[in-house]
Length: 58
Image 1 (cartoon, rainbow, N blue to C red):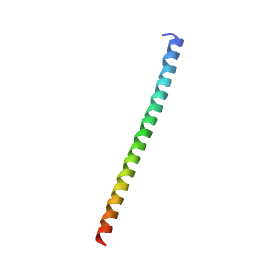
Image 2: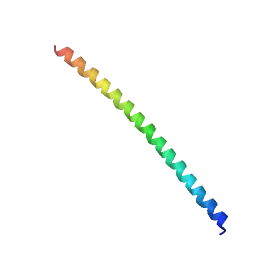
Image 3: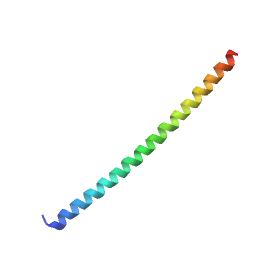
Image 4: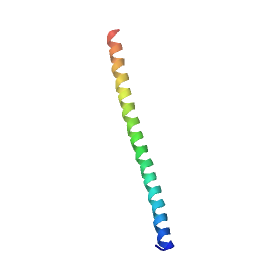
């Protein structure tokens, strides 16, 4: 193979790797954000429920 063809293959491989790394990072950030949101909602519901139980015991 010619050196230009090798260069094209190598340079495109690095571009592909960087794009896939960026996409992976973005996907992980979205997953983390969604998980944090659901955990906050669960925590708020649990706190509200416990508050109602404590008020009922008084």
